[in-house]
Image 1 (cartoon, rainbow, N blue to C red):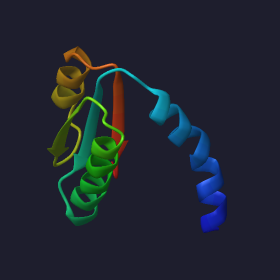
Image 2 (image 1 turned 45 degrees about the vertical axis):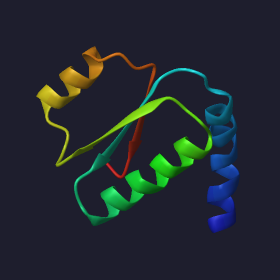
Image 3 (image 1 turned 30 degrees about the horizontal axis):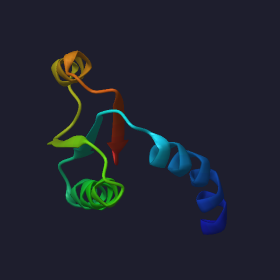
Image 4 (image 1 turned 90 degrees about the vertical axis):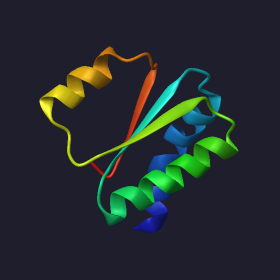
Length: 80
């Protein structure tokens, strides 16, 4: 099962490595959401990507509208 997940994730990882725009990382405010955000944060730092991150309790309509109107090219959601 883990091997299958890795194989499915490889194309997305390759595209992310090649991506050159602004990234917005969004995670959920709970133990696994904060952990997932920290792991993704470290990954983006290692890839030397331009990004901002945010932790939310959950995505409310006003959050979605605000995020949609901000200046980023790619939204990366973890554990939401």
